[in-house]
Image (cartoon, rainbow, N blue to C red):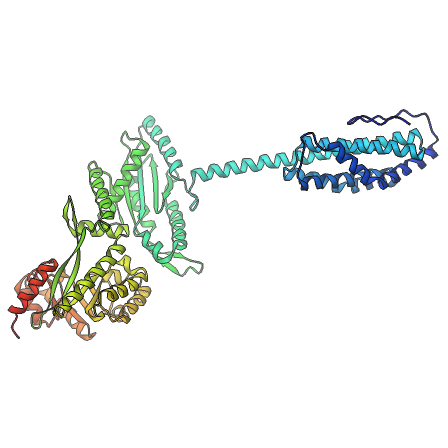
Length: 617
């Protein structure tokens, strides 16, 4: 018999002619010998392929062992006469393992090929030994080695196909991932709209075309009004759903030539080029605002109805860069918010200075509470029946070390917009209750009224804040009145009614401030546990010169009497106004006629003076 073949080489002997009957008998015997020595083939293969810096983990090694066993059995069945198709069927497991190795990138093509060749050499070695032991013909051994080589070549071809399929799949997956990453890098994940990066790129392209073609370009900044309160009240899930719905609405009204994007938060931007006189940026802004007028139906059951507005800033490109164009539109948008929201404003030179001033004011305001720059002023309220003192209204004031005393109209709207009103409002409650308790302990049997903002009323924290302020100060609950504007009262009727009922259960009084300026109905009033109506100063001012105002005051006072609610007039500045109000039997009042807002010491001096001046009616 011939010598053992060298590794990775297969020597097929050139046998003399042998009778066909002997070949038919010897070849199956070699196949049976392979079946019996399958584990020996595996051991020799492992020994051949071990070391040489080609270590693999246990799972991959197990896969190679399965390949060796299944391939050996497939070749043996071919030799025993079961036919190529049967052998191919037996080799299916081998091909599946090749596919797994390729799909999981568990082994390289080179490593799999090296181990296949090692298996082939071990098989050839076993066949030579078996042929010698069985004394088979040279023709049978040659045929067996040919079958082995064909099996190896077929397996290598199939293996390469598996790795090629996986390579193509990997390339396609990489291309898809690259496309996804590219989209994610340039688009907003929530709405799918272009993000700031892509918008800036498109603005630059539009500006370049504008310079070449002498056509106008405009940017429109769109920022939802009071979006933070929606998130705080209804949750971020509803907030995200609203942003998606807003994006769809805006996308439905912009022109095909326009670029719509989301810059983050509740800020959207529209970039328009080739604007005609009949289709200018202002008209586009009007379409954007109109698109938001219809309520949004949100939630799984579509029962949450929200109506939102937006502030829009417009800036036209005038030799500006992309960044400057967006900056100018942003400044105009802030101006629209300061002017009352739900409107658009066109950028003008000089706006940047006012915005800078406003930003600096906001930054100072954020530190004011920590730096103890807030203080309270107290405006007395009188019982109009006998002109005796019956309470004070606590008003927050801000004294900045450099700006001096900042006017309430300059910083209270900022407190609302930034959400700082919640923390400041909590501080006001605590300080006002403490001062009220101190005055009552000093013998002044008066009430303390504190204004509560819509932001505070949006969460149940208000109830805890009131309870804590009463407990810490020792102020009797009936001595505290919480004032809420009529507009705030109607923002979310169901939740407001629930929270006010909880406040009322503490024993605290509730008053509607600025009554007559909102849109509450008699039916709504009856839903809230209201103790007092504070008639807005606009109905009181000039009362003696306005017959219609006098009639309206009479109606409001009568409404209070019918509902067993105390009526309270704000802004009394003239004696004639006081006379008319007393004649209509209005219960209480306050105004500059009696006293301006005073600090605690001045307020106490006023109490003493009033007590000495008032004579029994």
